[in-house]
Image (cartoon, rainbow, N blue to C red; front, side):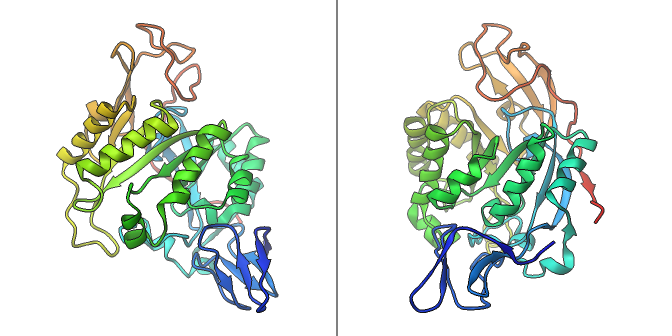
Length: 357
């Protein structure tokens, strides 16, 4: 496969450089130079994608690991990423992939058709574009999604939502679900710790809610002393309820010291519970905690009657009190999300997969 795959979202500048219009960084590149993401470059006067068909690896995960709690619970998802990223998170948990410049020597080689065929053979209901942000391998992700849809396999984007309007519309036209990292509700945090800005992420979330049918959930990694104050959590959760509605699930997950923030402590369990309570008080119907063992706070309850609907122990499902239509067996209220007649049985397994070239 070509490592100079043509792309659409760019334009020429008067000084001979070309500007990438995929994300709000708007990288302006001289001949032969790569953008901030490492994977889009100026090749012979055009922006090309240099990682099309190349992956940092494939693995079958539980869908709950994305995390998605209201999308095909218990089913296996074939996960993969490429390399590079258009953010610079100092707390990155996948920095070995997102900051990699050695893709061509480390990658699995896989066409979109091969990925779709592999997902089908392995019994995966969906494919996830994850580990690094699929925004930067836009063309590859869309082609994989199209190949998957031909086999009735769904597509899941795990993303920071940092993307421009036109490519965003094209990308989500092919996605069935997304987990979006809302990393903070502070512009200062975004600027200082991710090298990006908050407003484009909020625009993506409003777009997903009001202009698409994509099922999406939010994740916020809570970093002690950085984005875990009561004030910020109140502001964030109130915005979610007012702009996106109370039924969008929110996942508050625990930070562990990594990359350039090894001097910060792990997130206390109490912080996650506090965030969950603040979200509930703001009107969020489905707040969860993650990266910790807490069956109660990671399980799903009926917002109307309080019945336990989906019990979770890490990524294993326990009690299940949804009927075949995805409604509470106790009161008949529908649970927002995408559910099939019965839940999957994949459990907590993580199965690496090597694709044949």
